[in-house]
Length: 105
Image 1: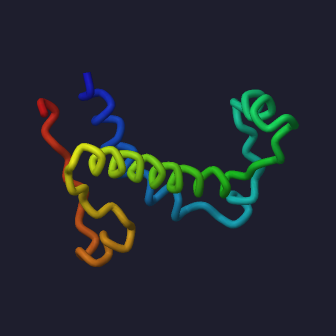
Image 2 (image 1 turned 180 degrees about the vertical axis):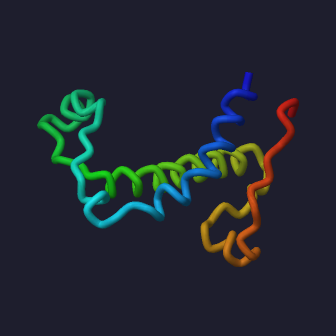
């Protein structure tokens, strides 16, 4: 079920800001080899350029944006009005805390 994933996500959500805030410029510049580099090489036809921890941290945020856009596009296709998911929207609403559904939902 989804309960274990929700539990992991809640823990991650609580720990991520402190982890990211503690990163130094040196940490962010540290090479971060990706386990799926061979897949990338096949897709782009050459070895991928090196990535850093900073690149990876940014990718996590940007990839989440990608998926929110996918969900909103699908909701529109189904005739629904999706919620605002832009970062600045969260700022406009006063940076509300995450609302976690109960595990049974």
